[in-house]
Image (cartoon, rainbow, N blue to C red):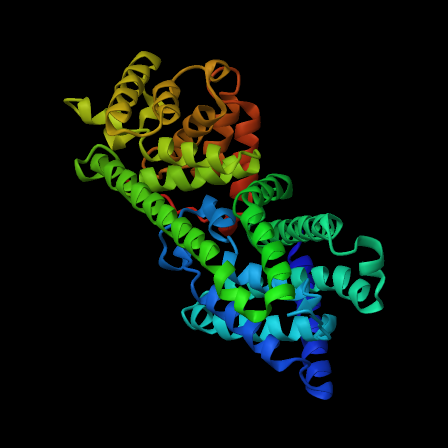
Length: 428
């Protein structure tokens, strides 16, 4: 999606929110106690969300992964959209009030994120408004007209219908999330959508199940059912936060280890970070999954770790210009060091094979080899022609050393400039 497409999504959300607020202010709030209870739960769920990207802890390729919605806030918002009864009495809040209540609660909770410079919170809010509106439009007219009970009754058919609507809503949310990420990063839409759908299969399943239970529980027992059924999802949300924190700490450990070659004077300052950032951008361009991008990033950070075994450092740390046998020896030593650090086995394999001919390499090793060579060649002290001449030299090596598709993907990423979020190379 182009940037104008993202603005279209945001504009649609603003229009829906304005219509909902205007309608609610004009006609008054139907069932204010129910509206207040759900608004409070949505706001609490959103406030409980902690976004590690705001603290710079996540890598650029983790953008889609770290934009997970707040499970409790999502469940509360969607339950309100699919609520037909409360304590045995039919509800009357309708589509527009649903949008207004959810928007007001989510906006109030988003203020701290926006105040800290988290502009992505606005995209999260737009997604919340559009997905809740989608669910409400699918359910509320059926309920208000009486056709819902005629078709499904109160048994398993109603549960099946609610699950089907929530499945469609999850698909709608994944499409919107991938589209906004595409507009903001320029990464291919297909892999972004695939990663969003995979994320929905995890926490999304828990959200959908909780929504159905909460909607049916409130229909029978009233608002007392909300805190009871919210506790399991809140515990799940806390578990996700802890897992994310562990991953962030692990990545910081790998990054610190990768800096050992810079501190010891074996590589140029920032080389490992540049190679990792640019490798992840190329991996996105080639459609790698989040799991594959994580392996790629770790391998790129550690690709020069084998140089610590050398008595005499390679000039400027530029392994791209070394004889094949020497480069392979350093790569094998690096793979052995990586294994001893406890990183996943795939990471050590990528490090170990980066100096082999590309036809015998996995995709991640091809990317690391090419990006590492580019960063070495683009350094002013090694290649006065700069990045264009470095790319041309990589193209000349596509017969054996560099995969043509990887080289062209690298060229496209570099052509986009700032979207690659690559630290500029500095001569050693």
